[in-house]
Length: 274
Image (cartoon, rainbow, N blue to C red; front, side, top):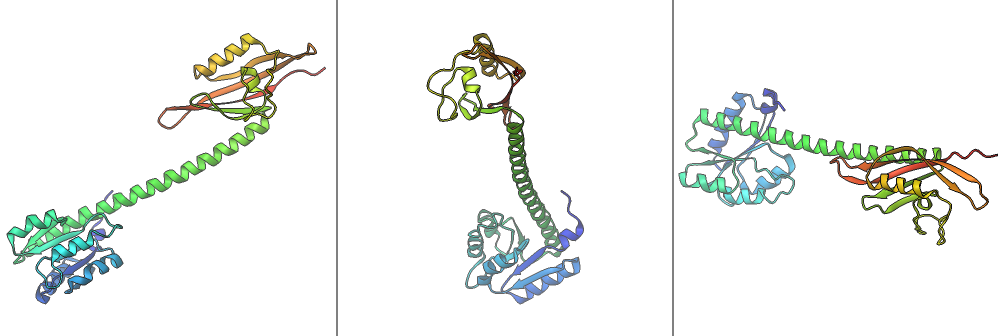
């Protein structure tokens, strides 16, 4: 993230001082330096409202003012939840106030009487930090938005894939990381010898016999080991003695941090009908 000179010179600056001579001096200095968006107020009570409205990149704040002093103004600015960064440089003739001001949240200070070179340097440095902070904040928000959009797109894509998979196969199933079935269509529960009525209407309380037990153990072992399998052959003998053949495919699922989150698979019947 790089700032151009125009970024800094176009920053919004508010001068707060109850002395008109100081306001004019700083305003003239900033104007001559090329700053284009400089405003001022001599009423400290107006600062918080002005900042909420204009979102200043920098506030040059005198500490010694009637009504509300600079410390009270900074306390009021801190209540603005929309801006956690306090973009304040305090102006003070009291050396003892400098540390107090920094502890109160000011980012820097300028001593009075004003040294014009010091004023320009501290303002430039402060704006550079402030604008980079804002760019980083904007970038973080953009990144979060992009991640949310990509996540939504991924979920939509996964939903389309699941729908197409279900249409292209005789059955489909999903398990969570604990091996619990969360989605089932077809005889996969029968294949594994599992009876879960709430997930499959076609699975009854009475166990369905005829499945090849050796193949059943192989399939269970592959799932337990979190291994993918493709076109795993599975067979079953019906009560009339006829044999039915199936092909089963499955894969483990992992989240972006490579944590196992479950299993999903499909199957088709490949029995050749006479």
